[in-house]
Image 1 (cartoon, rainbow, N blue to C red):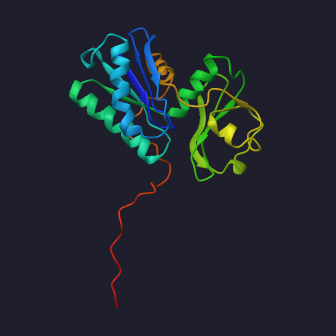
Image 2 (spheres, helix red, strand yellow):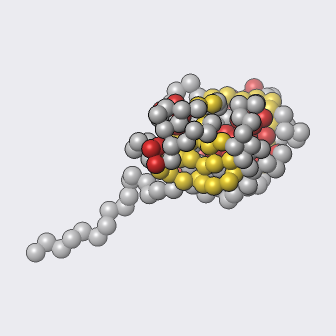
Image 3 (cartoon, rainbow, N blue to C red):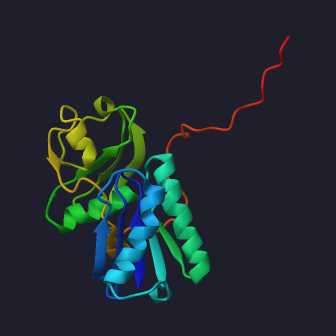
Amino acid sequence: MLLAFDTASPQVTVALLDDLGDVVAETVSAETMRHGEQLAPLIERVLADAGATRLDVTAIAVGAGPGPFTGLRVGLVTARTLGFVLDVPVYGVCSLDALAVEAVDTGAVTTPFVVATDARRKEVYLATYDADGARLSGPAVDRPDAVATEAPVVGEGAVLYPLAFPQPVGPLRPSAGWLGRAVVEERVELLDPEPLYLRRPDAEVPGTPKRVS
C-alpha cells in the first residue's frame, strides 16, 4: 500500500492507497499550521481507518513543495524516517503537480492553466501546465502582479490575489489522495525526498560575529 502525505500548505493531508491506486482512507487536518504536532497522529488515523498497520505500507509519497520551510521539513523528515524504518522507497512529488493532476481529472480545467499557491510575503509559488496537466515551466516564486494572467489559475493564490488571477478554479490546496494517484499512475516527475524551498528559510544560522574594535 502507498502512504501519501503533504505538508506544503497550511493543512496536513494524509491518504492510504491500495495497489490499484484507489484511496482507501484519507484525512485532512482540521487546524492549520502545527504540522509537527498533527502529521504523526493523522498517519495513525488513516492506517486505523483502513484497518492497516505500518507494516502494510510498501511505498511512501510525499509532497516536496514548494512551501514554507517548517512545514516541508516536517513532512520530508517524516517520510525519510518511515522509509528507512520500514525499508520502503520514498518518492518526492512537486505539490503543484499534484494540484494540476486533480484539476485536470476533475474537469476544473480544460485548457492550459497555472497553479499558484500562497508563498507568504505577498508572493506566490507557481508553475504553468498544458491542458493535460504536464508542467511547462516552474516551479518559481514571484509577486502576483509580476505573473498576472488571464488563464485559469488553480490553487489558493488565485483566491488571495484576485486582481492578478481573475479566473480562479479549484482545488485550492494539495490532496494526499490525488498526490498518491499521480504517483501510482506515473503522471508526475518523481523526485528525491528533498524540499523545494525556492528561497532561503527565514531562520538562518548566525554568521561570524564582527570584531569589536
